[in-house]
Image (tube, rainbow, N blue to C red; front, side, top):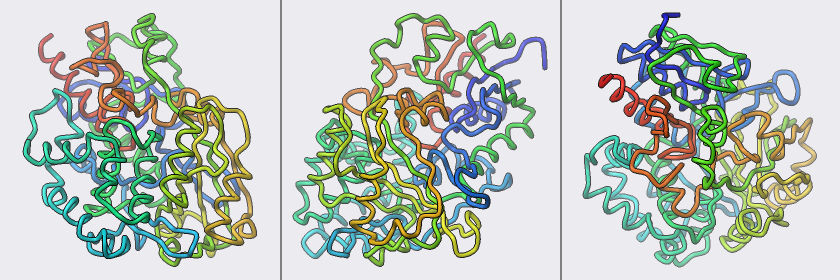
Length: 472
């Protein structure tokens, strides 16, 4: 290790790894330090239940990953990353055995909404989809890391997406499309009537049409391992089992980049109450299952979907979100996000068996057990589900936080993705990656563009870092 590194990165989640790669690609000397024994953060894979069943403890399906401008610019396929697609990216079944779907095809998706809403849906998404690659780069690069490449399309997206999702839903007549959109918004655990929640639903829908909601072959760890492999080939160093409690624990460097929560950064760097107003949001109660066969969904579409959303109506979903976000109690009928990776990747389980996970939203730091409520919901849409369960591994807020220190109180978004904090995080600032110390930066999903395995927070932060390094 040189006597003075150009940059030290703390935290080997997707954003820390991406920041380190971006700096190493530009010739800077980089060392990365991770407290856990393996890299990955929210993109890991482990045998949580039974031998041969490979589960993703955190993120599993990756619509933002395959669409990420940062990942797409890197040769990650050379380091083992291969995206696998289920026949359908996502299905949202209903109690009557039918389902609305997100297909790669806009036409098939619109048809699943019913005749009254097919036209309005196509008019909403097709103009944006035509400019998707520049649009996704523009909104994932904001704020001042790059000028918009297509300001007209970005403005059109903003007009539809900046209001609450409840406004966007007024374009549609049928409950089916409203329910599916409510489920898309709920992926970031934001109340449906919040600022810019329409944009959340639109991003997930457009991502499905553009490139799908795939899983990596072998599990989410493949994303992290590919980034780490590329970093090493660029000359970067990766140190695991290295917990950082203060800046003095790190080697001398011209810049320090933290893929941590704002609370942890403030503690390590001695920033006092600089991030005291940063809010952490609801948590999740997650169950990883080893199954003796596929989930017995009533709706045929759900059997071939990589992701399945569970909520009978947009009102039921809204009630569940309010309970977790505002009422400080677990919902009686939780909205569930479920992923069935082995539909796309049979190598994730022994022959004929399946891995499956489901989570419901609960208040931050909640200490109860949501297993019964989750399985009751699953049985509504997949009767006989419990009969398929070979083993389960449950994780509430405390367990989620133990797996990933960035999940404060179990908040997998590393900060509430609601109100102004959805757009302006971790503080109201035009320079969100900067901190009170000119050589210290933050690159976690507590910074724009926010939650998800996409590396763009790390990519954007790296730009701020190399601008400083070139000036000093």
